[in-house]
Image 1 (cartoon, rainbow over the protein chains, first blue to last red):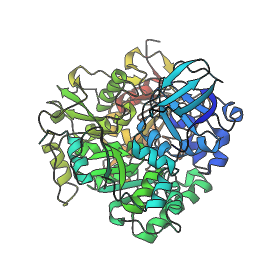
Image 2: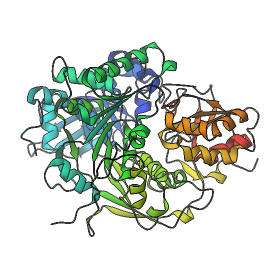
Image 3: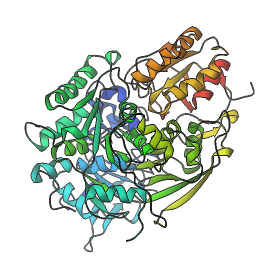
Image 4: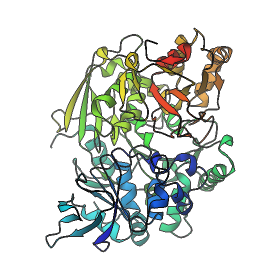
Length: 172
Length: 416
């Protein structure tokens, strides 16, 4: 996959981080421009979070990341903050699809052992397995990513995919 | 042929080939909806997919709902909304105007959601349409842009969890209580990636309003869809609303499912979700004693006529001093019926405030915003911190009756 390997600093969040926490609808009604909204990333959970994000950081979460509203600014605001991947024990389905559609790598893995601030590396091994390396311990094997998702991610997401192909022709 | 779940059958037809749980399929939705909250971003994506944007592939299969924003949302929100309105006007898309109500309610009321259809909506509560036996699921703005571009969407076919309903709700207990109890038992991700298919003898005991509450709240358990089987209740309800033909789909006996959950409706007691989680649910009388500031009656979960009828039965005892009660009907039709029946006058006489039909204060985009530190008891679907536009408010979710009881007592829980 052309977007791997990827390295970054772990920013650890808990379980059930909903999209209203990622970006509140009260800000979304003012603008959908993610470069503006990024200042409010995760504001209701941790008012200092947005200012502490560095480009290349990787969000690490527990279960059900991105639950609640299907609003897609909850993905574009993460990308606008310079974050290119979210690793979670599980995702809400709308967040996962919005992430993949926008080229934000959404990886499912047991994130329990990952600690705040650790340097993470996501990479494929020679056998094609997706592995998460964290300073603190043994490699964590991640859930495989479906071939269609890989194809989409390599084109930058659904937008790139449909810009290139004009549709889903040739796909069952 | 291998037996299929309701979801597999509907998605097979929409994919034009037999599909089974776990597969990725390219599907052609029969109906796609978006809101002023999601359409402007979809139009940006469409522009990126195809310079100039251009006409949607199937304008007749689209409904736009201007329900999240209104005059109270400020000029920027209204400018975003205008983009959706202008695109709909240019391309002949049905557009539900500001004040007509919540898109989900309008689509259901008009009979546009029908059994066997695949419906996608750029709003998570699109699961509501499953009440009529459609497969209905939430998508994002980029997916909606894809539907505008080529009329198709990629979907992973979900496994189904069967919710076997038995018995019937006792007096004073609502479908909202049953839904909150399911959230309590399964958790906020208990049905992730799965379709909840409601079956069993209890189905016939639930009217369409009840079923809409259960499918609407299915997404709060992480479900991709919630589906009720087509039965005489569905048929009678649809016949009142549409002349359009429909082909009901029935689950095959023996279809694989991911699990079975038994729910005895007769054993359900009033529930309440405590801040700030939909699955942080306790029996309503076991909630810690808390003084209430604001009672909110509305949204796509709890803003229908039945909800107001049940709330009013309790509220007639009078609203406690210091409590604000806000009514936001789910649609103009609901508001008109409230007026015709005299219920609106009763609400006003009791001191309730009436907001225009729409999403209202549910996600803090339109209408009243709770004061700092306010305690809110609401018929809505989410109680996340900040959900109603103020991160310092605490939101409790309950049935219309329990909400009204909170307004009468001025508190929830007991004993105090």
